[in-house]
Picture 1 (tube, rainbow, N blue to C red):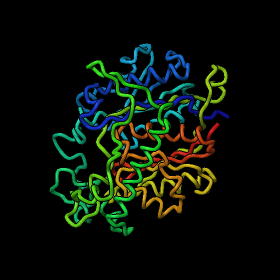
Picture 2 (tube, one colour):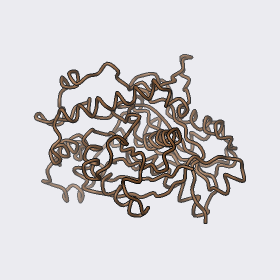
Picture 3 (tube, rainbow, N blue to C red):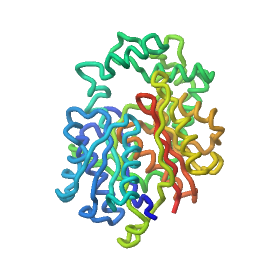
Length: 390
């Protein structure tokens, strides 16, 4: 029986908004990880049968099928095709799911999955320029629902959703700030220990420089500093910029094939894609779908939450992983052990692959058999992926 294994996982450093990677075109940023993926795994780019690339704001420099353009920019053969998908923040996690399904079904033997977002160069929400994407029937369906304002430019608001989660689960401002501070502390400890070194490929910049490390970690933050930040979504709210993911630039890539093909071509698998699901929930609160997605993945895998040695739940906003912890009963010590998007950043279309890359390296470094990744997505969706170390 065919399976899907990941034989390589590489990412760029995650750059701050207007930081070290802001001068790099998103296609060139992506090309960097494709070249590094081939070099580190020893795969022949000519063997790649498709590149599935996640990107959320597909406009301007990220338009015209960025997935195909990154193949050409990487210098890979013109015969290698590429496509681009948008499942909002989970785009490159969905790219992994599609890649795994493609090789398991026998439609291809080697597929590269990944994604990119240059939020410095392509503003979040830019693809909605010119009008609302929801249509009259969606607007009418949710008219009057709490958190939905018909006349706002972007009616479904993730920040408002985060506030709704905090209210529903009873998370205080202090609890969110404590979680945010811990994210920075974990990320700083991992960076200091060299835990990210094996997963990151340096990125050259147009000015002749080089970005080698994640830029978003704030080593000087504290609960006192976080307490000074404003609450932009509600005057009496608890969510701030400090307890939300950072606007970032970055890309990541994963090589997916079968165990048999990897063996015959001298490639060493890191992990097997054990289970891959997608779920959806309330689109107004928007950010709760990782909870049913996790339940669905565990049920389909025949596993219990305690069987999973590491969980990566994207820190879009601190209430998201906190609500996930409360509902799943997962061990908090196993959640985002190397920090999350609050500290490392969230380059939308690239985050799913970035998180998977970090989780796979953590599993390998610590001999963890099962890892689970999930992340909230616009529209109230979430992917969940369980991988098994090989």
